[in-house]
Image (tube, rainbow, N blue to C red; front, top):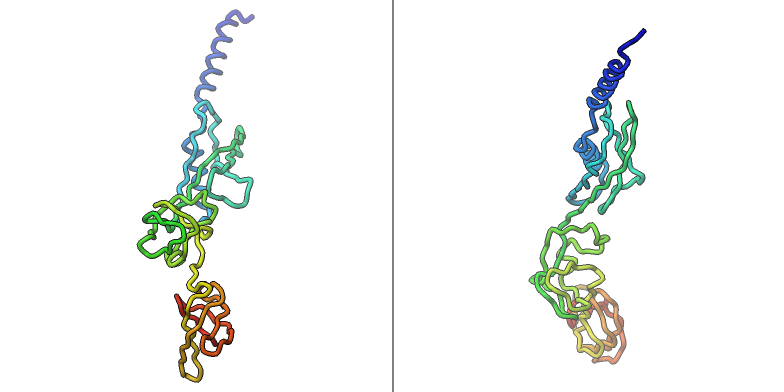
Amino acid sequence: MIKNIPLILALALICATTTHAEQKMQSHLAISTAVTDYIAQHIKLQGEYEATFLPLDIRLNLPECSEALEVFSTTDVIKAGRITLGVRCNSGQKWSMFTSTIIKLYQSIVVLAQPIQRGAILTREYLALERRDVSNLRDDFITQIEHAENKQVLRQLAMGTVLSPKNLVEPKLVKRKDAVVISSTSAGVSIKMKGIAMMDGTKGQRISVKNQNSGRIINATVIELGLVSVD
């Protein structure tokens, strides 16, 4: 006959409590490290990136995984912005959860070094390269100064503005009724004549020009300010 039942129950409770207390919890740092390593291995963005793992809820307690954590994604491509990645333990007391990380992408892009008025031409002193977070720009920016130089702005822009192809147009080097020089080269002989532009034209555009000597209307290619060329 067992007389010490209360003592036996107390010892059993102490053992159970001790076992539970000794169970190790999964480190939040290990989870964040697994996620950032996964991003480094799978990201395919051009330029420098910065991944910021959003802290987990301090109340989150998961059993420590005896194997390496598995990170998984619901999409094939990791993009800039806020992304969600899953983490799971495939051994012991299996568990699965989702985490959030913010990825910022940095590139050198062309910005305005000083304000500019609508219709002005972008010369070199207006342009600068700056390292910026381009995560939310949707590729709508210019990365080389040469691609913006000598373009005409469509509206007034403030200093520091990120330049977009949508802000710029090719300037009109020739305007309708402008006096132009018509250049023609044949058999190594170059001839220049006076003409009148019959329409506006940008560099490389073919426009109608009136030869002032003959009165003929010809097609010519705009070369530079006030100069057109015929084949």
